[in-house]
Length: 220
Image (tube, rainbow, N blue to C red):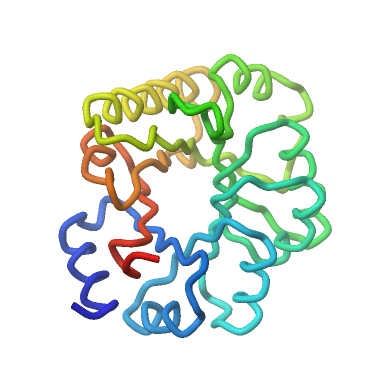
């Protein structure tokens, strides 16, 4: 099947309740353009430099999602255009995003990233760390960010029961934060979990956003 066919088949399978982020890291702009021409607007990149370069040559209505670890000194480069930063893992980073968004007269959507996998190499908050951030008075003063939900990556394994357990733990974290901090905020509604190998398990566990690379673009 063609790239566009891959996307359309996935879209039909997941339905309109789940948002697909096409993970376009390392992929050439020509492939992104094919998907854009098929009607897709949401693309995910890991690296700031690559995202900026692609943004400069692709249509301005593309919605770019930063899904990789983000250093505070790189925020200024994507603040003028990024749609969602899915990998917020510290108060320091939130403060920097808010500052740079204000400079650009924007409000940037953010997801809090949680460490739900067994691998130590993955980034992310614990529930206690997130609660500490959200209790901080500085967060209530931020006018140029909008915390819309949570993100997490499961363990890279064939053990589906482990993966499902990790996804359920992220859904539980979302429910706790919703009740504790966002009960009156309909905008806090996103759970970004699931990739090409485990998106079906993620959707079953309550995912609202899946990040799909190889199933659409093919193996690297």
